[in-house]
Image 1 (spheres, rainbow, N blue to C red):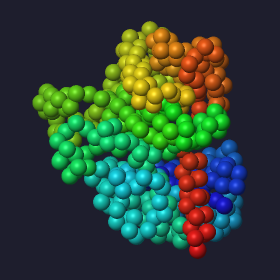
Image 2 (image 1 turned 45 degrees about the horizontal axis):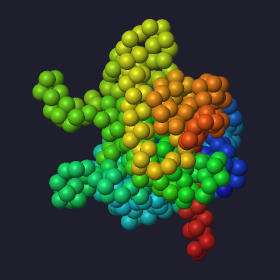
Image 3 (image 1 turned 180 degrees about the vertical axis):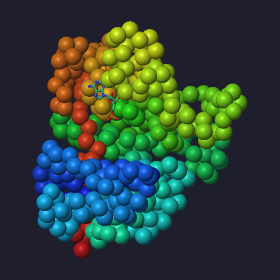
Image 4 (image 1 turned 120 degrees about the vertical axis):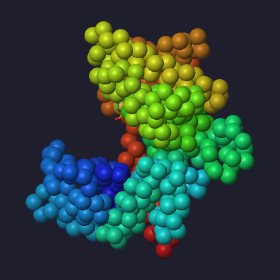
Length: 402
Ligand code: AMP
C-alpha cells in the first residue's frame, strides 16, 4: 500500500510518497512559489534531486507532481493506481476533530467553518485537498495538528477570560504539533515497554516552531501552544508568551495595526528578533561561541523559556516516566539540552553530560544519569510516518466495514 502525504501552504505544496509495507519513503519534494514568479517543483528520490517548472495554482501543482511520480524515465510509480490513499496535513480541527478523519463532503463543510481559527493556513489546506480530490479518486484523510490535544481538561485549555465569551467564540488553547507529540508517545511506549495508556511524559518538541506537551496516561493534558502557535515558548521567529498589552504598546509606538503586530510577533521576534542575526539555533550557537553577546542572550532566553515550561509540567503529570527532547533543536543541540536541564538536579532529574555530548544523531538515546529519578531521552520525531499510519488505518477500517 502506498500513501501520498500532502502539506499545502498558501504558495507551496509539500509531498511525500510512502510505501506502507516497509514504512519507507519512496519520494518527496515541494512545489514552491505556486502562482508566483519563477515557480519550481523539487523532486527527490533515490538520493537524487531534480527540479521542474512550477505551477500556477494548487491543482496544476498536484497534477504535475503526479506526472513526475509516474514518468517513465525518472518516476517511481508505474501508474497512479499504485497510490491507495492521500493524507492531508490540516492545521486546525477546532473542537470538532479529536482524531484523523476520512474527508467527506460534510468534513469539507466543517473545515470551511474552521477557517477563522487558522486564517493563514486553513484556506491553503482546503485548497490542497480540493486540488487532490479533483485529480485523484481515492480516499482522502485529514490529519489535524490539534487533534492529539483534544484530551486536555477544561482547567488546562480555558483562558481565564469571561466564560461566556470563551464558549461563544471558542477562544481556548487548542495546541499544535499533535502528530509529533503523538508519534513520540507511541515511540516511548515501545522504548519503555509500557502501554501507552500508562505513560506519563513531558515532551519537548523544539524546532523552528516549538511546543512542550504534558502527557498523562498517554493523553495530552496540557501543551504550551494556544489558540494559535504563537503562544508558549520562545521560537525561531515567534515571540511566544508576552503580556498582551505589548500588542497595544507596539501599535502605538510603531504606528502599526493589530494584525501587523501579530505578524511581527510571529515572523520577526524570537531568536531572530533578539539576536538580530538568525532564527537558526545552529548559526546562533556558532556565533555565540565566537563571542557575540546578542546571540548568547537569544540562546540563554530560549533555554530559560524551555526550562520554565518543562518545570511547570512536573506536577501536572505527577511522576513522569521520561522527559523527551525531539525536533531539530531537541534532537541535535547538545548545548541547548545542557542549558535547559541545569537546575533540575535538586529535583532528582540529572543529565549525564557525557552521554548528552556523545549522543548519536538520528538515534534514540538515553541521556540521563543512572542516579536520575526521571529518565531523559532524545527521540527523533517522524510526523509524516504518523500521518501515513493514520491514513492507512482509516482506509483499512473503511475496507473492513464494506
Ligand atoms: P525543525 O524546525 O525541527 O526542522 O528544527 C530547526 C532547528 O533545528 C533550527 O533552529 C536548526 O538550527 C536546529 N538544528 C538542526 N540541526 C542542528 C544541530 N546540529 N545543532 C543545533 N541545532 C540544530
